[in-house]
Length: 171
Ligand code: 4NP
Image (cartoon, rainbow, N blue to C red):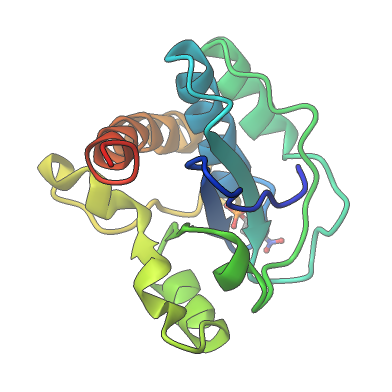
């Protein structure tokens, strides 16, 4: 978890928030993967990341050990992240609020007011070639659930970064 960052005068700062249910599996994985991509591309001074859960079940907790291990296998460290709950203020602080599935998209749309709903997207809308709308919840599943989640998140992270480059950073 990192504190929210705000747009500064005279400088583009793009703030991106990833949201799932518990903030211990999918959204911290997305934050870690996207953050690593942003760093690799030298954009960490202009794109800031955070993640949150729509539930209050895992506030203050590190990511699930299975999520941490699967990410580590792909060179992504999630160990500094901690759970927090999404709040209405997030729609003021973040330019992109990215829901992992429809349930969380619906919960977030209730928090968005004052015309800020245009900041809310299903994360996989940035990977249309996958033909999927939701990152499935791997929490109760067995097997390769976390690997599939990582594959989807890597694809959507690439698409999101391309979109931010073409829109927010091209100005
Ligand atoms: P996440 O997964 O939303 O991807 O973090 C879950 C984590 C915990 C629970 C459900 C989903 N739970 O029921 O505690």
